[in-house]
Image (cartoon, rainbow, N blue to C red; front, top):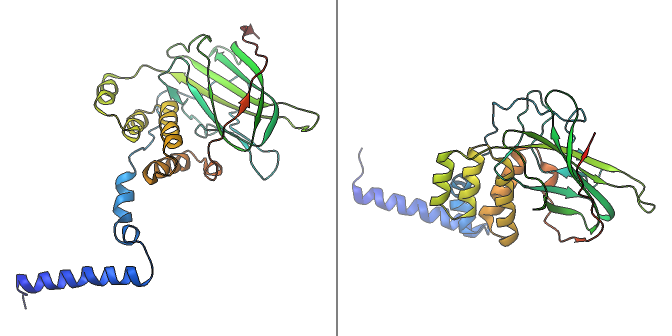
Length: 270
């Protein structure tokens, strides 16, 4: 038996009221009880699409060790995709001097960062930058920007980087992580689309879609630091980390560091 339109409206209204009554009765916020699933689905805009045609990264030290743990507590982790899998692509950047993010344990001592241009003809490369500096920080996420005075990354070249927590008398452990990067030119579609958007999530989504890892991370990281409690940004950041199997980073926030010390920047070969 068919219901009249008026009867159908009454049933729909009654159903909606029932949902509201249930939500209120059990103490759930209406935004969570009724609208969260669709909102979360819509917010998943940043989906990293790894490049598929760049081959296996060539590094001077076999394997890409993006994670090193002193204990079962906080590890030293490079925020890059897991590259130990066979034929894993090199994470891409469009910057001559990109920013690399790390999860660090509590540190009060010297750390080192080294950047090497790889040579596909051998297992060695040309070290183009190295620096050692004092770092004092609690456990958390930090950013390392390759300085402006350093030779910029060449297009189409593979590079490896090392970030090392050095041995000290008070902390007799060395921890080191290794990663890679490759600079590419943004295609015309990406250039055009970036001009049309202003929101960080939209920009990160475009970078991720084109397989540009380092700018995807940087865009979301900067947005998160500016809006640490904005649910949509937090959700996108967490999902990006999960997609790269960086779940151990999830509980941690960005930290301010105290650093200033000697620096060595002379190019070296080995």
